[in-house]
Structures are given as structure tokens and as C-alpha cells.
Length: 324
Length: 199
Image (tube, rainbow over all chains, first blue to last red; front, side, top):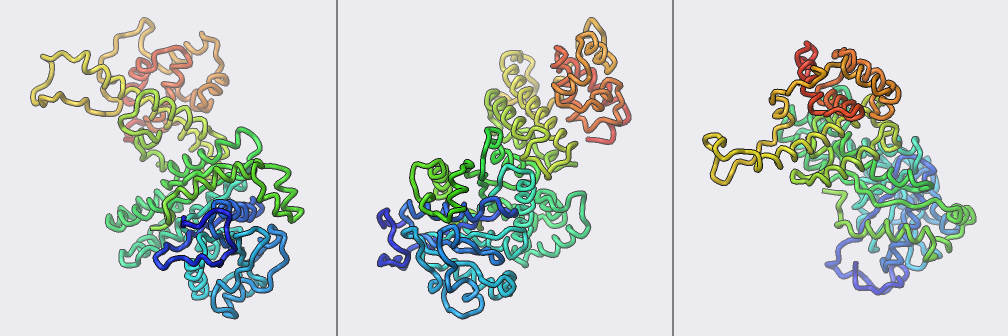
């Protein structure tokens, strides 16, 4: 990205970004279901980006169950996102702590779920703006489980929204649900001038056979108002979540990712971009359990090989492909 | 109406309009495997019936595109210069990419065994020693649908494009010429009152 040599300085070290430098990329990792390796993927993606010479900040956006520090073998940091949301600190930069991984900073998740899991709209917007201006080449957000809009909004904010699935029916089901929820949320945020919001409400209320299928929503909107339909279609074309299949164990699992992209295209009218898969390995699981991040940093492991391929595809994507 | 019913054959198979037979075949093979009924990728987004319909629709799209290629390939060789209709431009009229109508307009030469009816399909199947179960397994068409095809219970069958795909699949398994069989069977289907309700 920038001219800094690989090796990676600690975040916020001497190399200040030039004023004209583009802001860092935001990568959000979500997927609806819990326990499918979102946090692991966020951590290892961040490490792989550091390996590529980027200054990276990991942000634990799992506002109800923050635990990224554990993946990195760290104790719970004293200051967390709660302090930003509750205005105890004025900038996100004050919350970044260094991690055992050189070049990787961490902003830990909120300590108190009740206080911050559902931040007020104003606070959420403030947090999102701050994330976009964080001083790093890339920010990797680890989202919580579920399809609540407080999760989905962070997914939509990112330049790259990564949807994680594992080869299990429950995970696939939740991923599709997440996809639909994110799409609807995104569509509802479209410029109110076009009146899409009203038409949408009308469409959803009259409820065709399958009102939650994006392609059907588009058609119903276009029937009522061709201009709004065209705007919606443009919006759909820029909505391109990325897909990663985690915990691949057998050959049949290898077609799941492409199959989901094919299905989303044909059944929803939505395009997913398949980034690739990560194989299941006992060592990975052991490293997580032992709070042993050194394993994630090793090169030449099956995990490192898979990560290099997946993250390689991610960094080749145009900046901001997930947004208009 | 299912979302994929609105997609053209090219959109469904994800190939460009100028795709070669090889590309079409590859796209079909890949997709029909990835989106096979019961595959994990379809979990929760398509009911069983819809999964089967999608598979049949893929097959129909595949055949439609290959048929189109056949016609496009035939026309330059077989068309007599004198037969070109009035108003054809000098650079040669591109064959209109109409979907699967042209062949049915051609009068079929009667087969030795007569018209291909549902009953004849059943007889041929029984003579070949293929059970309904085996045929269902090979074509991935539900047994009830196969029975409806053989009994010509058109009311139990889906739209024309699916029926065409089914009949093609059955004909191929029975070693019959799918186009011939469909010319007869399709006409019978169209003549029935059920044909009128779908486009």
C-alpha cells in the first residue's frame, strides 16, 4: 500500500501517513453464527496483513462478547471501546494497545455488554466515523454473532465485508440470513429523495410470496417506480460481500463456497465474491486453546498457506468495493 | 414463479452470449454439481421442489444453448442462397436466437413406432428394463413426476420449460432422440388445457 518496507513497525511509529495518503481499508468479519471462527479469522487476517508490511489495528466489535485479547494471549486491556462510546477518551487512537505481534495494534471490545452492546445511534455513528479515520493502513473488525442491525451496520460500513461460513447447515442458513439482513439494511439506507424507503415499506407490507428475496424486492420496487428500481439495481450491483469457508475437512466442502455464490446469484440476485477456504487443523484449535498466538505467526503452516491465498485475493480487490 | 425463472439461459449458466459448446458444457457440469438437490449450498434457501426445479432449469438452459449453437452452425451450410427471404441485408442475416421453437415447427417424420406419447415412453422404459426408481435416480426427477409424464397427467407437471427438460432427460436415458420425443410430447402437452395457463 505505502512505501514502508515489510517487517512492520509498531502502530503509530515514525512513518506518519502523508496528508494525501488514502485512508486505511476497513475489513469487517461477520457471518451470523457464533463459534464458526470469526475471531480467529479476524486475528489471522490481521497477522497476514502485517506480514505484507501493513500497519494494522484489530478492533473487537463484538460488543457483547469481546475476546480478541485472548486469541493474542493478552490480558484484558484496561481501556476498551466502552471508554470511547461512553466518552471517557476522545479518540480511538488512545485505545490502541500493542500486541505480541509486531506491527499489530488492538482495540479491545467493550467490557460491559449492558452498557454498550446496543449503543445509541449517535454513538454508533461517532464510532464508525472514528474507525474510518483510524491511523493505520488497515483496520480489521471482528463482529459479533447474530443479524441485529448493530452487527450488520459495522459490516456495511467496511470497505470489505467478509462473511464466514463453516460446512454445516446451521452456519449456511445463518450466513444467508445475514446476507439478506445486510442487504435490506443497506437498501433502507438509500437516499430518501427517491422515496425508495416508502415503496419498500409498501412492498414488504403487501408481501409477495417471498418478500425477503432481494431480486423479488427489486422487481416489486421497479414495477411501482422505474426510477427507484434503477437506483436500487445500482445499489445491488455494488453490494458484494466476500465469502470465506472455514474449517474445511473433506473434498466435498471445497465446492460449498462457489456453490453459495452460484446460489446467491440465481436465487437472490446478489453477487458474492468467493475468497477461498481455510482448512481445519488440530494445531489451530490447540493454539487457540493454549492462547498461543505464536502459531498464527509461523510461516509454512497449512494455516499460513491458506491465509496467504485468501488474504491475497482480498488485497487485490479495489479499495471500497463493498460500498457505493 | 421462482427467482431463477426470470433468468435467461445465459444468465442461469453464467456464460456469455458467444459461449462455445465446450464452455456451455463445462458451465452446466460445474453448476449442476454445485447446486445439486440436497447440496449444502442450497440449504435453507430453496425448498426441495425448488431445488429440483432449479436443476431442471439448468438442464433446460444447457440444452437450449446447445440447440441454439446447432442451429447457428447449420444455417450457413444448409441455407440455399436462393431461399434467403426478401429484405435480408447483404452482410447475411444472423440467425434469430429464438428459443427452441424452430425445431418444433418442422414436421416430424413419423417414427416406426408411431407418435411419442407418455404411454410409449412407459412401454419403452419397461422394455429396456429400467424401473421408475432407477430412472428417477438417474435423471434426478421425482418418481411422481415421471409417473405423471408417462400417464400424461399434465396438470401435475410444472411449466413447459421444465417439462421439456424432464422429457429430454427421460428420452436420453431411454436411448431415444430427445428432440423427436419432445416434438411429439410437447405438442400433446400444448394441446392439453393445462398448457394454456403458463406462458
